[in-house]
Amino acid sequence: MHTNTTLSRGTHRETTRITEILRKESVGGFVLLGATVLALILANSPARDFYFTLRDTHIGQDIGEFHLNLSLAHWAADGLLAVFFFLAGLELKKEFVVGDLRNPGRALVPVVAAAGGVAIPALIYTLINLNSSSEALGGWAIPAATDIAFAVAVLAVIGTHLPAALRTFLLTLAVVDDLIAIIIIAIFYSSDIKFNYLLWAIVPIIIYALIARFGERLLHLKPASSWLILMPIGFVVWALFLNSGVHATIAGVVLAFFIPVRMNKRTEQAGAEAGLAEVMEHRVRPISAGFCVPVFAFFSAGVAIGGWSGFTEALNQPIAIGIIVALVGGKMLGITGSTWLITRIRRVNLDSDIKWIDVLGLAALGGIGFTVSLLIAELSFGEGSDYNDYAKIAILSASVLAALLGSLILGSRNRHYKKIEQKENLDDNQDGIPDVFSDDSSNVSSRIAP
Image (tube, rainbow, N blue to C red; front, side, top):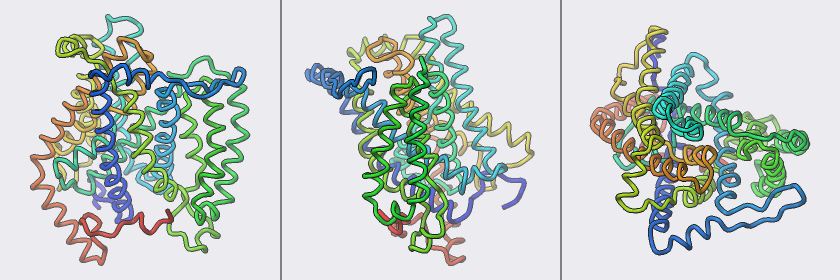
C-alpha cells in the first residue's frame, strides 16, 4: 500500500473478520426491519390497544430504593440494549487492540469521518430548532447515530459487491460512531447520579474482570460457563448502573472492555484459535441481532401515525424537519466533507479503485440512524411525549430516504465493484489465500468454539 493513499484494502485477516461481521449484521438487519414493520402495523391497527398495553406492562419487583419494576419497553431499552452495547464494546476493544484503530495513521480517516458525521447533523438539527423550546433542543443527539445492521441489510438488498476497503471503512465508521454515541449517552443522558451505587458496582466489575482474565481457558472450552458465571455478575453490574442514574446500557460497554482480546498461553495451548473477545462476539451477536435489538425496535418503533394527515403534521414539526435534514443531508455532508478535509490536510489521495462517489454513497447509508437514534429520542423526550412520536416518525422516514439514496448511488457503481472484487479474488488466489468474498468460502466463525 502506498503511503500517499487512503481507503486501501487491509490485511487478509482484517478483511476476513470484517466480511464475517457484515454478513451477520445483514441478517440482523432484516430481522430488525421485520420487527419494525410489525410494530407499526400493530400501533396503527385495531390491535393498537393490545400493543400499547403490552408495551406499558410492568414486570419485576422493587427492593426498597432499588428499582427493578420496569415496563416491557423499559426492559427492552435499558436491559436488552445493554447486550447490544456489550457487543459494541467488544468491537471497540478489538478495533483498538488488533484492528484498524490500533494504527493511528489508518484509523484517522474513519475516526474523523465519524466525528464529522456526528457533529454536522447535530449542528443542523440545532440550527433548525433554534427557535423551538428547550425540550426540542434537547434532541440534538438524535441524528448522531448510524445503524450498521440496517445499512448492511440495504447493501444485501441492492446486491452490491462492495470492495474490501469500503467494507472496512463502513464498519470502522460505525464502530467509532457507536463510541461517540456511548460517550454522549453517558455524559448528557445521565442524571441525579448516585455515586454509592457506582462504588458498589466496582466490586462485581473487578470479580468479572478477574474471571474473564484468569478463567479464560474455561470460558473458551465450556461455553455454558459464560452464561452461568459471567452473566449473573453482569446483571448485578447492570442493575447497579440502572439505579445509579448512569444509563444502564453503559454497563454493557464497561464489562466488554474487561474481556481479553489476545489469548494467554494456557488458552493457546488448549487449541483455541481466537481470543475470548472474538469468541464472545460470535456467541453474543446472534442473540443481540436476532432478539435483543428487534425486541427493542418492536416496542420503540411503534407509533400511532394517525393516517396521512397525522403523518404530514408530524413531518411539518421543526423536530422532524431537523432530524430528517440532519440524518439525510447532514450525514452525507459530515462524513464526506470530513473525509475530504482530512485527506487534503494529510495530502493523501483515495485508493485508485475508490472514488468520491463511493464515499458519498456510504455517507448516505450513514443516515440510517435507527436503533441508537430511537433510544436517544426516548431519553430526550420520554415515552408518550408528542415530541417523541414526532422524532420516531422522522427517524423512520429519514432512514428510508437514506436507504433509497444510498442504494441509488452505490447500486449505480455495482459493475465497477464487481471488477474490483474479481481483481481482489484473483490477487488472493495467486497468494494462496481462500476467497473470503465468494458464497462458498469457509466460515471463519465455524473454527471458533460455539
